[in-house]
Length: 386
Ligand code: SF4
Image 1 (tube, rainbow, N blue to C red):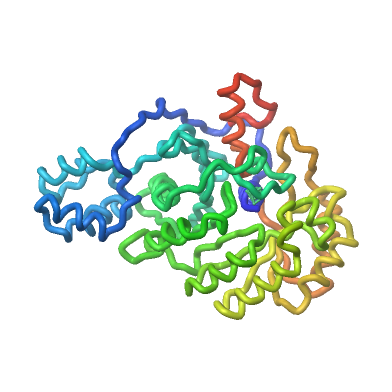
Image 2: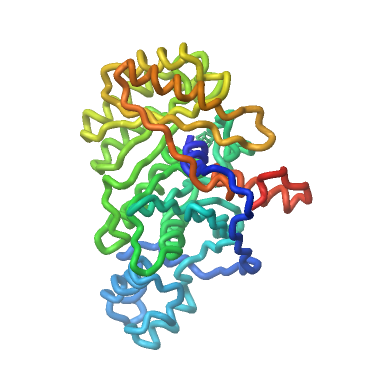
């Protein structure tokens, strides 16, 4: 769902000027171990084995996670010999930005080459005093939502905890020194709950005081709806916010738009989301991508109200961000406004997601798709170029 959410999350009115694009040099492959893939305890052990004080582990990680160091050489308070040995074994951040796009509203998008050379995307969204990172959890996605660029070629693999954490560090490093990352939305490429263990491990460092220090309540995990995993997330005891991507108000329509619904069923997902609320006290948000002439009629607004009645839930409406090659269209303003009106008349809390960064293909998966087309020698679809 994520894809869309982010897509959309980040959409902004199209502008005629080209956004600022920065091409990075070719990615250098390295066999060095990514530092953020090993835990503080493992790093302590590594240090001890080489005759260094184990407590340097904390200082080394702090340099990367807090003080924005991108080389071991920059860690000026560490002994020279230690910096040399670290440089021979590890790399502070292994993922490499292959493309960096900067939208006029301040949204930044990175196409990253991961540790095996696969591409993923992540986005930094500034909004008033918030600095929100939207991150990916898989290369591709296996959920197959019909409107989504990320799922077009299926899922290739899960991202490692270190690869998830590196996205946050790289996005944070784009910010001026006086600004800090305040929020995380796990709405990028992939289904987060299909890679739950690795995601939780990465968020552990993201939310730790000696990590990135982001409050757990400022982390939102968005899912297409995997009931068993929703319950496991609740059992983790964390205060993360949960967003469930519905996109359809009835089983029949959802089976078509979100194919995994054929197995999970809408009611099972809602039950799991209710359990999440009971267990964590965190109100669940429901996301609904509005697709012209598909799920945007007054009938669907009424059905959605009935479905969510009594849950006190918030509904995020996400007007579809059009993806070249897919047949779906953005709803008209008139239809969207009526949809919102009906939901509100029915007592729902409704929010229409702002458009951000559309001129940098902020819809999740679009930039990666372009990169693949470029490699394959295909012309890029008009209007999708960064
Ligand atoms: S296919 Fe995957 S990434 Fe795309 S919207 Fe569905 S769950 Fe999200």
